[in-house]
Length: 399
Image (cartoon, rainbow, N blue to C red; front, side, top):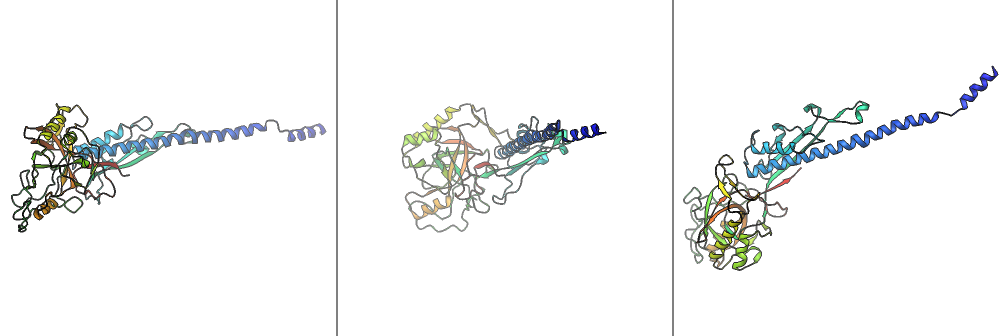
């Protein structure tokens, strides 16, 4: 009996093998850490990729609004189809996320009073039968995880544009004298207008212009006016008409050579809404012809095809993603110009209120430039006057 008691006491005090307990506990901690490091890290990557997918879809949808069809929000429309294709092209952990037409919506923008925002939601979830599989978590009963993301992009009215032409025409108005509005109309608010007329009385039914930033602006619209052909002629100070352009000095750089260069090449400086444009006072007929022809020669195969985009038209056969012959023309405030004319100012002010996208088709020996109204991009800069109702668009993520 005594030897048995000694053996029991010895076993009680024996700590051999106790390390296996620590090894077992450490193994469990290691497995838990591995789950955290591998699965959580993978899920964070999946979440980031899902956000990239949603961002790409929203930007593609907003781009389609601008360049294809601003008002088509249907499931088969270019904005929805473009958003879905772009989102699914960005894989989430090796597989395309689920995006259906109902996941692409167009929230109303109370600031711009338009549905110019595209919201895209992407999913890799059990409800969509495509959850993300875990690697280690399945050992602990968690074999899949849900991942989703949402993004919004807006085709916001731009208030700054670069690469502008050194021409300017008046923004569009409501023609009350010989309506409806057409490129051959003249803007009239007084019985007679001219540089030396100080006696003309206001017309009883004057033409109406409402600039961007105010309710119901009258200016050019990239969707409504798209494809309209305009023949621009060298202008004079006595008429405010959309078919006549006034030459102006970009960034105050004067002279025929600089003027021609600003037609044939892109001036990177940004022109802002509410900016005054100094007029170019010299004879620019020759430099206009020279610079415009040089611009056309950079992309000679580009043409306007009215049949594409469901009859809205587009530029085709260009050697560039965006033809260099697509340029922006600053639009001036016809009211301010007419008021300066009426007061007898030598050089009525050319005040930027909007921009017009213009695809140059041809130029003749008299420097008459024929082209089409097309969508263009710009940027939105806080602090610059509101561009609500503006023509150019700034495509940007807003959420």
